[in-house]
Length: 261
Image (cartoon, rainbow, N blue to C red; front, side, top):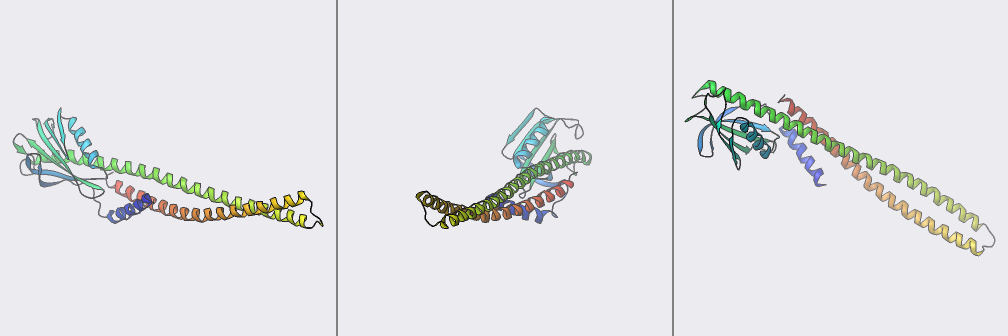
């Protein structure tokens, strides 16, 4: 039930924010990362967790530096080789902040010597840094959406399998009710035959009593099966609704992914 409520909440959230979702866009903003303050490149990353973003940033910087450290929500790298930005080894400072339930903000400060790379210092170096960050962020958003879709499709498959099991169980219980109904009628006919006798011997009396007990047991079984069918119907209705909502979630995620293709 908790999972069902969560799916409903996620559905409302995704649909409400679908039109608000934008493509990868790099902007400049003032930010402080570690002990450095100044112009940072800013981008929003979609559907990746803070942990995953920090891990990817660290890996991204380790490809260019042997000195990369993580502290909380920040990553620091020195002696970073970025030929497109500078002929010299530079420093890179990164920070991740949560923006909403599906997006995180990534900030990067590039320091070349004693100068922070920005549009005011060197537009060529800035554009190179911007292009590199764009490729990184756009790829991560696309991959995160692909992973989310794959996970959601597996969940949808599980929901559909559960619904099929409920339908199979319903059919099985309905068949049991029909079978028990036939047994009750057969026993009633046997009792009628016994009652048609003028005199009942001990064996007939015992047989009649057994048939009556069986009828009572069959009726109790039918009552329980009917209760099970009512509960089954409720569960089927819930899972039909869950499946519909899960499909909407996947559809919304697929549209989001297209923004990063």
